[in-house]
Image (cartoon, rainbow, N blue to C red; front, top):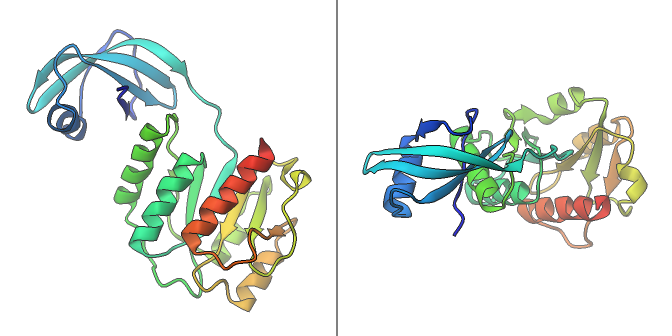
Length: 234
């Protein structure tokens, strides 16, 4: 089995590195690897095949042998999603990562019950999902922001794709062209308030679109919307 671990620091070929406590515990106690075992480490610079050259219960040292994969071009899909409870937000973080988003923006709206995100936990989830989905770049997780502030600070080179339960319009290929990035906006359980919806629709060149005739939970809507955009893009 090919073990892939995210290594945030720069990697130099033929150099050795003492692993973090977390990686040491994982390789010795969970995977029960031995000296000489091969592990792959990756970051935004690429992926390296590495060998365990020293192993003790609380100390593991690896040697980065050779680069086996070049860095990837960053995906242009951003997810802006209203916060939900712990289990669905963790599902959202995991699935959005697996589906290849480059950035996740947690949003507070009028009907959002949850107001905070555990960033350390969120970062751990997206790194694990990146390791398991054979990708190179964990999505960046921004600070929690209010809907109004998010809309005001939206980059002019970003196209806003609004998953709108009231829309009858299907998303088209031409809707996705001509912008540096695409930002999918998913509302809260219970949808945006009428005032908030008008605020979103007032954004220049926003594209409201429908995904289903059914009412979707936030986590289902996230998976459906990203999958739809990926399908049309490809």
